[in-house]
Amino acid sequence: MDYTTLSRISLKNLTVMHVLLMTHSVTQTAEILCVTPSSVSKALGQLKSDLNDELFFRRGNQLMPTQYALSMGPAIHNVLSNISGIFEQGEFAPERFGGSLSLAMRESTFELFAPTLCDISQKLGANAQLSISTKEQFSFEALLSGKLDFLLLPHDVSQPPTLSKSLVWQTILEDEMVCLMNPNHPLASVELDIDGYLSCRHINVIDKDLSEPYFEQTLTQHHGARQIAMRVADFGSAASTCHHSNYLFTCSKRWAETALQAKGLVAKPLPFDYGQVAYSLVWNTVSLNNPACRWLHSQLIAKS
Image 1 (cartoon, helix red, strand yellow):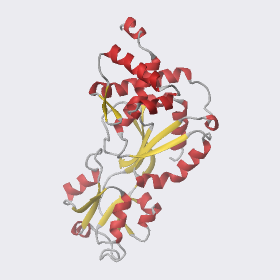
Image 2 (cartoon, one colour):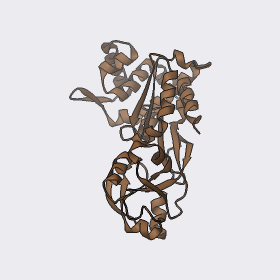
Image 3 (tube, helix red, strand yellow):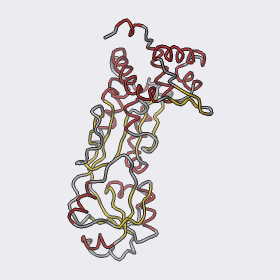
Image 4 (tube, rainbow, N blue to C red):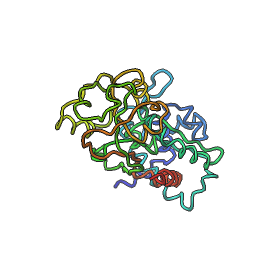
């Protein structure tokens, strides 16, 4: 380890770099850190010199990170989280917290967890913020780089969601799958069997991060592939489509029992073995060095 080089690196500069990677803006970074824009620019200039890289280039009104800067993101997040854990000891008081916490999830997941999330928000201090983004906006990479504290999503329990050893998965809610259909659908008044299921056209929800669902693989291997008529962005869009068509939508039973978009649709058990499904909380191991993140984690897993 080169202690001489490390002694020249400023923790303040690393903090500036971390926030710049999230905001892509000198002005916003200065506001978050409660310093002047010139102070941010000075720190960035020092890092450019220390690391021998431009780190950011300007595109319109935004600073876009170089590939080297992006590659540094997870490492800087780990360093700052570990240092934060050293200095932030003692019991966390949510009512005195004035910072921000962040989660990302599908819109459909929010419908299930809205009561819990609203309760968490009301326990936090008046100046605190709970930011909830869509999974499409922030996903696994954001957990690794520190742009996001937690991810909450439905998935097949048997499906290995990511290969990163830095990410931890914990089941919060176990679930099962059902098939939704219009009440006027020909199959609505009869028992759903595999022939009927495969004879219909289906709606599928797009997910660019997770591999092909286990239930899809099992169905194809043992019975045959579904006929996908439409691919949509989220559960709500799929349920709305069911109301206006004879397409089938396979989804979370818990969501179907909760969501307003699913009201009035007929739900039937799937006619084949599809494994286990659940809603899981995902986080970067170093995030729990932060007392606020530990508190939020405890509130979310209390749902399980």
